[in-house]
Image (cartoon, rainbow, N blue to C red; front, side, top):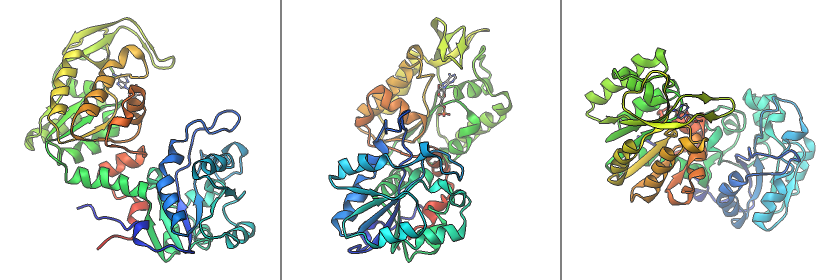
Amino acid sequence: MVRKVKTIADLPCQGKRVFVRVDFNVPLDDRGNVCDDSRIVATLPTIRHLMMNGAKVILASHLGRPNGEKIAKYSLRNVAPVLAKYLEQPVQFLSDCIGEEVSKAVEKMSNCSVALLENLRFYREETDNNPKFAKKLADLADIYVNDAFGTAHRAHASTEGITKFVKRSVAGFLMERELEFLGNRVANPRRPFVVILGGAKVSDKIKVINSLLEKADSMLIGGAMAYTFLAASGNTTGASRVERGEIHIAQGAMDKAREMSVPLLLPVDHVVTQTFDAEKMTIGDTAISAVNIDGGQIGVDIGPQTVEFFKKEIESAGTVLWNGPMGIFEIERAAAGTFAIASAVAKSDAISIIGGGDSVRAIKASGYAEDVSFISTGGGASLEFLEGAPLPGVEALEKLQ
Ligand code: AMP
C-alpha cells in the first residue's frame, strides 16, 4: 500500500522559516544562462503557497556535479533572477548554503520573502549525508519541505539527513503529485491498466517490468529492449541490439507474464536499417521488416503494424503508464513509432502518466507534452519508485495517518 505523505497544506507556516529542497538542476548555456526553466516553473505552486501563507522561504538545490568544490559554472546565482521574474518579487541569492553570513541573512528575512542558497553540492558533505552538515542546514529552518522528487532516491544531507534535525518534514506540491501519479494511481489504477515500456536495455528495466506485471492488465514492449525479448521468443533479430546475457531474464519476465495472465505484447514488425552510428547518431536507408529480422539488418523503431496494434490497446485503456521510447527517436527516420505512441497516449481518455527519463524528452519532442495527465520530473527516482523501492527522501517525510 502506498501511504500518503503530509504536505505543506497540512501545516501553518505564518512567520516560519521554511527550508525547501527543490530541484533547480537546470541546464545552463556557455554564459551561465538558464536554457530550460521547466524545473523552476514546476516548483512555483509550492513557493507561491508558502509566500501567500506568510512563510520565510529558503530554497536549496544542487546543480550539476561539482563534487564538493566551489566551481563558478555550477553556481545557482543565475537561477535567482529567473525565479524572481515568475514570482514578481525579488529573490535574495546567498552565496553559500551554510555559515554565519547565511544564518544572519536568514534571520533578517521578512515574512513572504524568498532566498535561494548556493549549490548544496559545493560541499561533499551533502552527498555524503554528513550529519553535521545536515544539522547546519536544519538550523536555518523551522519546517523542512521536500519538493525535489528527482533526488528523493538518494539519501543526501538535504533530502534525508536534515529531517533528523527539524521538527516537521513534509512534501511540497510537486512531490505530492509525483507520489500521487507514480504511486497511488499505479497501485490502484483505473482499469484496464496498460504499461508501455521501451528504451535501450532490459537490464535497466527488469525490476520495473517485474513490479509492473503485478499491476498491469497488459504490457507493450518496444525500443531496443524488445529485441532481447524477441530473441528469447526464438525470433531472429539480425544485427539489432540484443543483450545476449539478459535473454534468460527476458524469458523469466515472459514466464511471469504468462503465470499472471498479463498479455506481454512485442512488436510484430520493425523499421530496419543496414547501418547505425551510435556516436554520430546517424542511420542508413530504412525499410520495413516482418517480425523476424534478416542477417545484417538493425531494428531502429517499431513498424506500422505494431503501431496500429499498440494503439488499439492504448485506446481502450483506463490508465496508461509509459516509460522508454519505441525506437531511436532522436533520429527523424526512426522516430515515427515513438511519436505515434505519444499521439495515441495523448488522445486516449485514459489517465496518462509519463514515467520520467527519456520518455519525457520523447513526449516533448512529439509535441504532445501538454496533452497527458502527468509527466514525472524524476529520472532514476521515477524508475526506482516504479520498481517499488522505498525512496529515502520520501520515507523521511511525515505520513498521514
Ligand atoms: P532508456 O534510457 O533506457 O529509456 O533508453 C533510451 C534510449 O534508447 C534512447 O536514446 C533511444 O535512442 C534508445 N533506443 C530506443 N530504441 C532503440 C533501438 N532500436 N536501438 C538502439 N537504441 C534504441
